[in-house]
Image (cartoon, rainbow, N blue to C red):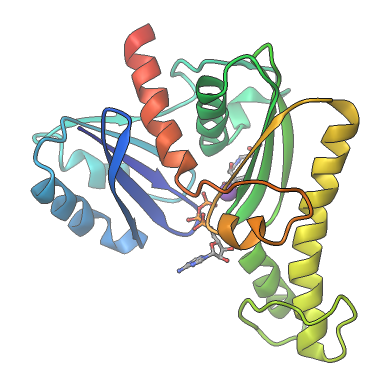
Length: 244
Ligand SMILES: Nc1ncnc2c1ncn2[C@@H]1O[C@H](COP(=O)(O)OP(=O)(O)OP(=O)(O)O)[C@@H](O)[C@H]1O
Ligand SMILES: CC(C)(CO)[C@@H](O)C(=O)NCCC(=O)O
Ligand SMILES: [K+]
């Protein structure tokens, strides 16, 4: 069994895999890390490896406390990935984006793939049918948009996610919900249309904390897989073991 851990910008997500099946998923805060990992390992003592990818601020030492129980591996840019990285600054490409691109490459061979991760940030990653990672985009995620409007103005309240009544918001609250939610949806539909204009065929993988919310509201029909990053982490690790 393999314990995969995704340290995001906001939260931590983990999943226990037996072969390619996720047995159980966990979401927790950064300050709960040690306690939660301990609980998971008590529940699944057959975990032989822990593989982690982190874009967040985290003490790696917290993981190495468990070194006596299982093998710990932190993915880095030095690991082996199944695509050719064409990013002009490959060393600064987020490790989460590298893992998503690896998962897309391994799960959907020989086709163009667009991965959209709607988390703290929205990231877009495109890997072509020849397994070249081309790049994509980074923009603020849903919650970040609500928070930024409040944090960087004097008058705008901090609202929680709500479906706008119309694109013509007729109050401060409705104007914010329209700007944030419609802006988010229009952005993603717009990007997908742009990729369609250039690439006749590609599959779209939608993941991240807002994936389910988003999938229902897009003009383009896409199925969400909120576990895609953890699945990809498991596959990237298998790939590393097979090819090292
Ligand atoms: N309890 C929660 N805390 C934070 N975000 C939440 C929560 N529940 C739902 N969300 C939604 O999930 C989004 C954040 O996604 P996610 O949880 O994937 O981010 P993350 O843990 O920071 O990971 P990453 O850095 O990989 O994006 C927010 O925009 C928010 O709308
Ligand atoms: C964009 C985020 C914050 C998304 O989690 C992460 O992938 C990251 O820190 N990336 C580094 C910059 C880049 O990917 O080019
Ligand atoms: K993200």
